[in-house]
Amino acid sequence: MSGARAAVTAAKEAQTQALTRRKKLELDVEEWKSRAKKYREQSSSVKTNEAYKALLHEIANAEAEVSKAEDLVLEQMMALEDAERRVKHLEADLREAEQAIAAEKKQMQVQYGEKKKRMDAATAERGEIAKKVPEELLELYTRIDKKHPGSALAEARGEQCRACGVRVLPHVLQLLKSETDEEVFRCETCGRILYSLEPIPHATPKETANGAANS
Ligand SMILES: [Zn+2]
Image (tube, rainbow, N blue to C red):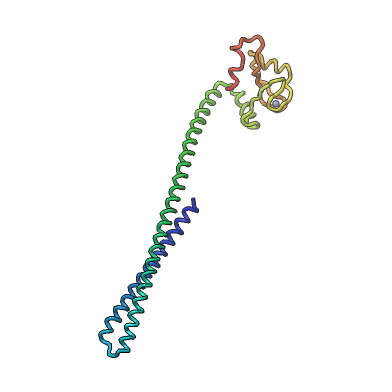
């Protein structure tokens, strides 16, 4: 991007230099033309044949210089056109790069907006859920979440805490599976709050804890 911008600047500079050279060469043409004109005017007033011949020579010389300078002007005009084309080409490249970046930026803003919306919704949902959680339990959760961000809870399955892998005592497992027990159990090793998704014995399928697995 900054490279494309620098290229445009350099090309514009080259264009300005080409224009300056063309103007200078045009002045050369004018100067040799006026010299030739001056010699022709003098030729009517010369006295000797020698002087006349010398003047004719000067006139021819000046006209040759005019022709040479005119050729150079033509060459310089073509160089100038090249420089102008180059500027236009590079400016188009720059515009294209700017548009691509603008499009990318817009896309990022859209994505940001969508993610922000999802996050706001999730935050609101969390707030609603947190209201229903007893204050002490919420404090405990917050404390563990600081230590284990995003995994303050751990499933107890296969007689293990699935977060740290250490064994969970059978009587704890039994209590976790019981619908009626409101007590909070924590893993003795990692300190996470344990929960169980295993079917509660004698419960009807509707009442199993599976429905809460994703919440
Ligand atoms: Zn654990």
